[in-house]
Length: 278
Image 1 (tube, rainbow, N blue to C red):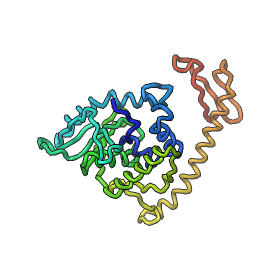
Image 2 (tube, rainbow, N blue to C red):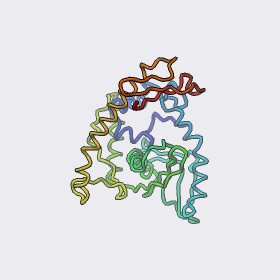
Image 3 (cartoon, rainbow, N blue to C red):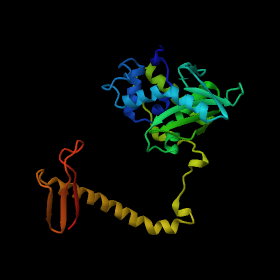
């Protein structure tokens, strides 16, 4: 087992580049041996311990599935091997590497991610941008792939390309962080100065006012905003009214509405309450 207090791993790069002051301070406390690193398998120490564990358990199958689905590339599991940059305090442990099918030259790093079903590719790209930059930097490679599982569905591969200027910004941030650790001074970073991830054209951002369909959006947007606010208010009132319904009443009418309670079930011991116009 490695002493993780002696280096910044790629999974910590995002926290150092875009984390809150509290997150960066906690990282400093860990690296300066003031608090122990949290046990990610302990529910009391890690809020998302189940997701972390699930990702670890499914990783082997995830990589095996990629081998069968993406026949144009070969997937080479890294088997937990850590690779260091010229500054040994900057390291990475890729999940795997990939190469063009039946070719020995490695083309890039590959990371398997298990996330929720509501995540979007552009969100994952931004979330793991700095982690993948550090992995490519340490492995001296120019390409990276993120393979996401959304809930229980395997998503398309997300490509990330090496950006040398951003990698040097990352190295500078890490080295300054270690100065704070060595001098036993709390770190002071303004993450607002961190450059935004260089999004590929597939995930570009646009200004609706500059598009040819902007006038149509301009007409619809106020209605969308108004109805969204009205829906929230309706849901609040609906919940409030249902709260008055006695548990021993199956039907109530009055004031133009009708409230009914369904029969009890295993999942709903008190039945389900609904409201409709009388």
